[in-house]
View 1 (cartoon, rainbow, N blue to C red):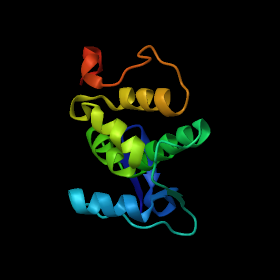
View 2 (tube, rainbow, N blue to C red):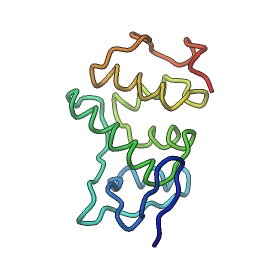
View 3 (cartoon, rainbow, N blue to C red):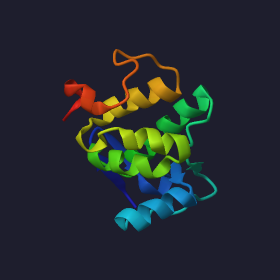
Length: 137
């Protein structure tokens, strides 16, 4: 299989580095009907995110998710739709409070890192996208 063009990056699907764990794949399949393959021995499996992980784990999780989304050629809107399905418990409750349908991906990542990875941003303390009009697409 040859390289697939995804904006600025090209990925060879036979060398995909990341795959979603079974619970995330199940959520995506039952919600959107999309079927992503399970991890092979050479891929790093992205686990669910619960919101209780330490800052380094949170930063690594969102970085792996971003890399996986790029690898799968997902646009920003699809990344936002699917990220919700990889978040459980406290993290799921947090992301449900956001007006995610109107959000920009880069802003979601900043708010995620602020909340879970200890990355201060100009929007410190923000609890929703709707309180920041500059965050909308």
